[in-house]
Image (cartoon, rainbow, N blue to C red; front, side):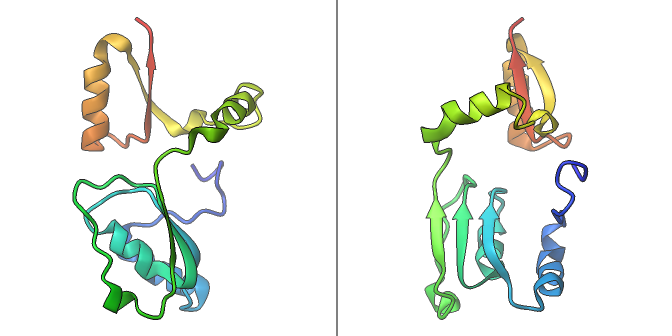
Length: 138
């Protein structure tokens, strides 16, 4: 992953605030994108945001998330939520097919269609370092 994203810091959640404080002199992040959907990742996302930051929530949570407004007071955060915005899919697919966007490093597992349930189970369990699975015809 480092070759594709040399300036991206990947850290465990427990280290996130410490690393972020070091990188931003304690100010917090201008933009936070929450994609993990873990039990505590929503709170971690808004806590990592500096005042007036934008927090984008792409993750899908199993439980409802709570906005603890008294704790957030003074942060003046903007939240953006939602899943995949499909309005630009044609453009994105075209860029991928032209080789202008390389997504191959995101696909960590390949399964034939006949084993799709196995692929879903792997993804649901977040096992074996799965990021994305590709399904191909039998």
